[in-house]
Image (cartoon, rainbow, N blue to C red; front, side, top):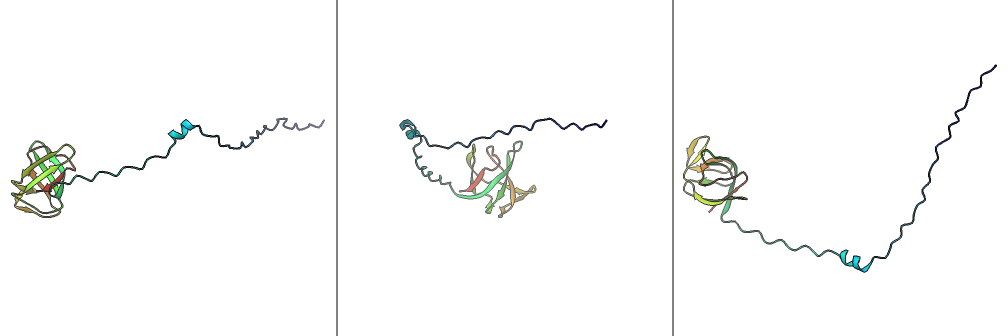
Length: 132
């Protein structure tokens, strides 16, 4: 007797065919037209508040135990000059009594120097320092 091979009698999966629907524009109700009205043009931004003096540097660090600030200078600074420190929560004015670079007292600091000096109030990173 010869054995017959059985064929797989599984039926192929049915394919579903989706009909493409036509997209129709429905009329917009009047109440929706008001909500979908074009936006008003943006208002002009107010002029920036002019800062007192010239920007001379930014605070990079603060030492609370000795109340000293570290500043990276963009312009020169000397002992006896008045500065104003402004930031998000900081706003005070003081005169410079001493300037240090690597724990050495100096009389003048030039552009690009990272200096330290005592401050009368707390300062924060990225506070701006202005010369008055």
